[in-house]
Length: 105
Image 1 (spheres, one colour):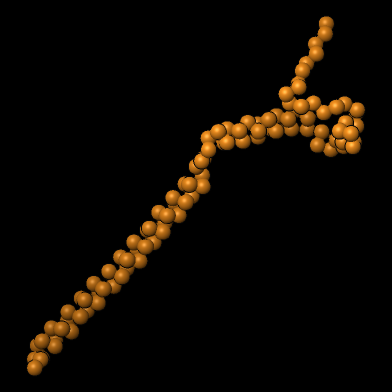
Image 2: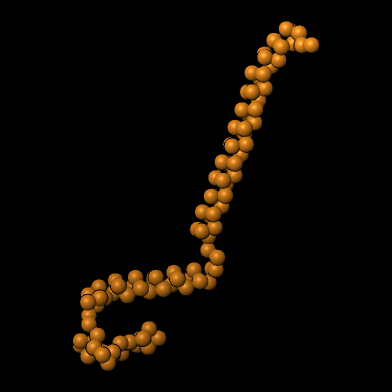
């Protein structure tokens, strides 16, 4: 048989046991959120890092060339090209490798 004192003791301890269970559940939720935050941070870092340094260098050079080209010729965006590849002034387009400056005195 269960005595009255035993039942009273069980009821007093049940409150403490309930609190312990709540803390354990809360700890598991907190650990899961912490792990999820770490995973999100790692994904963000991976997106920001450069995987191929040579490719990054080529992209930077290409962007710089395009920026320099736009700064030198800001009005050339609207220049229309004819079917044969010449612009309105009749000049042939110059490749980047064929840039030459002819200086005569």
